[in-house]
Structure formats: structure tokens, C-alpha cells
Length: 249
Ligand code: SF4
Ligand code: F3S
Ligand code: FES
Image (cartoon, rainbow, N blue to C red; front, side):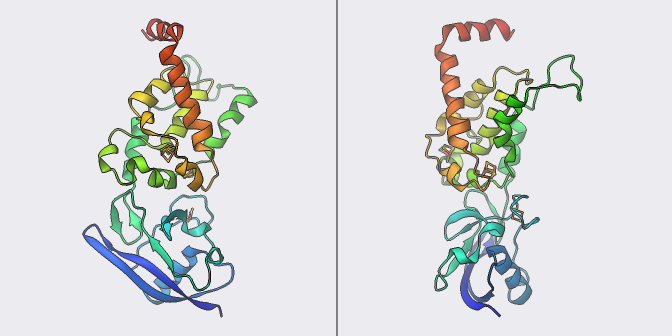
């Protein structure tokens, strides 16, 4: 038998809601998602939460815990003082569907807008070859579990619905950087797209995205800053500019 702790959960839907207080049993080693499941089993059977793997790998259980974007399944209750009330709210940047479940389709839209990997002409799938060093260069970015915590925390869109149209967000800057580093990607305009279509210029390098990433991807240092620098190089390098005009025809 564990101890009884104070737990607070936002309940509601698109029309509004409120925080609801619970007293709930917490055992050693349990994570926030365990507590939400206990509430569903004992006190709030209709409490909505999205989850799947309970192992930090599916990216479904993103929520805000004491105001910080986190994965519910990877946040141990022992992180908090026993006397502290743990408050769980839905991601703020996306519209609420119900309780802790938000509509993250903004991210799917941004994924669709990013041109896919473009293989070189005349090379069939299965025949692509690349050096291990090139594989390793973008390995870090492929660890992304699409939890969208970085998208949720970025101030460019967090309280600015009006910026969403023009800004893809950190998750899609790492995708663009990954493709830009890919030796077999035939597109040469990833940097220009990052500026012109993805709105990378809105990012002022606050690094909040990097801080919340559960996969510890160095989003700002390894993807955003290099993409910004390379875009600037291209814009101010007359040879690169001329090359892009000639070879893009
Ligand atoms: Fe989540 Fe990190 Fe991927 Fe962003 S980059 S969606 S924080 S895993
Ligand atoms: Fe946003 Fe990350 Fe830039 S939080 S402002 S995308 S460094
Ligand atoms: Fe899959 Fe938390 S349930 S990451």
C-alpha cells in the first residue's frame, strides 16, 4: 500500500473546463500515467488520456505536468515532493478535444507540407548506398518519437495562433535538416524552403524545444542553427546564388 497524494487534473472540452482535485494512492516507482490510470479505474472512469506504449517510445502521452511539457509515462511521481499537488493539464498549443487529449493535427499538416525524400534519378529502392558517416550525421534526428512536446513549448506558436500558418516548428526543422544532410536527397532547396515555407526565421533560438525533448535531440544546436547558417551562406554567396539559378532550371 502506497501513500495518498494530491493530484489535480484539467477536465473539459473545447467549450471550456476546470481543474478537478483528487486524492489518490501512489506507490514506489510509479509514473504520472500510472496515477491517471488509477483515477480511471477508481474515481474518474471517463477521464480521457492518450497513451500507447508506456515506455517513452510512441510519443502519445504528452501532457503538461506542473506546467512543464512532459511524457506522462516517463515522469516518475518521485520527481515531486510528497506534499506537492501534482497538476496535469493538456498541451496548451493545440486545441483540446477532451480532458488531456488534444488535436495535434497541426503537426500532420506541417509534415505534409514538407517535400518528402527525393531519391536520385535512376536508382531503385534497395540500391541506395551511402557512407556510414553520413548515416550517423542524421541518426540523432531519426530518434524523434513525434511527441510534439517541442512544438508545444515553442513560444512562436504557444500563445500565437496567428503564427501557426507560417511556422512549421522545431520537429519539422530537424526533419528538414535531416533531409538536407542526406547525401542521396536530390533536392537542393531544403534551406530555402526552411526560410520561405517553414518560417525558420521566426525562431530566435530560445532552445526551449531542446530542453523538453525526451530523446535529448539537440534540436537548436544541431538542426536549427546549422540550417539558418547555411541558408544565410547561400543567400549572401553570389556563386551559390548563381549556381542555384543555373542548376534549378
Ligand atoms: Fe518530441 Fe523531440 Fe521529436 Fe520534438 S524532436 S517531437 S520533442 S522527440
Ligand atoms: Fe522555438 Fe526552439 Fe526556436 S523553442 S524559438 S524553435 S529554438
Ligand atoms: Fe508511449 Fe508515453 S505512452 S510515450
